Image (cartoon, rainbow, N blue to C red; front, side, top):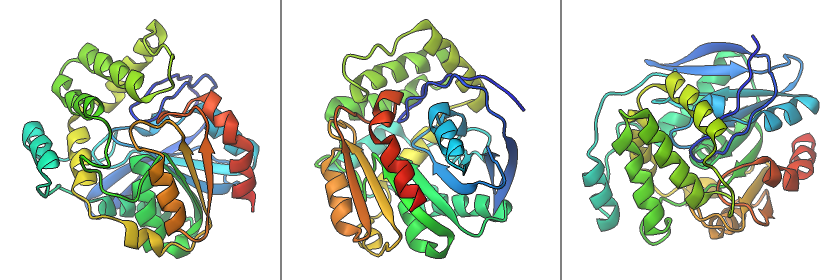
Length: 316
């Protein structure tokens, strides 16, 4: 199958321009179907990419997929539960109530957990009959990957964590109020495609690379295609509840002995860079790369700054 795409996403800025071939399918984790895409080649070293909050599998950038394939890796991506073509859930948590609980430190009871989402990733490896894989997770995907690596160490060759944290977000360690407010506004436009595009562009401006124009006709058009594939945005609030409702993972992360590479932007306004230093201290087997001028979004300019170090790490 061949296609061209160029998409921007929430928590992961994508600019995709190359045609790619892949195989698609579903994995089953009990009653939850997980849509995945295997870019191949079958002879390549498997690397499972775990994406962030509300993001579909189509949002991994071609420049990353191409670089991995060029170095004999086999990129495999998937829709986390509740987004894209994976199983969708039906609860409708109150945006206002969760917002209030967050600021008052009142526990949030999510419909599913970060640990449930970690087992979804393992089900993809099971479906593809892959005994061991490299794992790369970004943002919420990094949180999911932490649990995956800690709970299923025999399945993991190496762990790369980008722009993530082992801590549970709260008003003291979370983003600035204006960013939190913009995150929560996203669901308010769930039935309005143009509204969803507007909210995303505003968020990109807050958490992306400074002085970058995210409001372009091309970006808007490709975001419409993205929204058409993913349908309603209800999973966003449920995934956010899973993040905020999760227990602190510091003790779990400290148990990780798998070779780990931690990559973080020095000006990330969503997950502050101090989280990278903390994770580096917790994981004794880790290396740390702080990327100058990188916010929370992954673009080609930022990628080039750590591209060679990533491939060197994966080849060790």
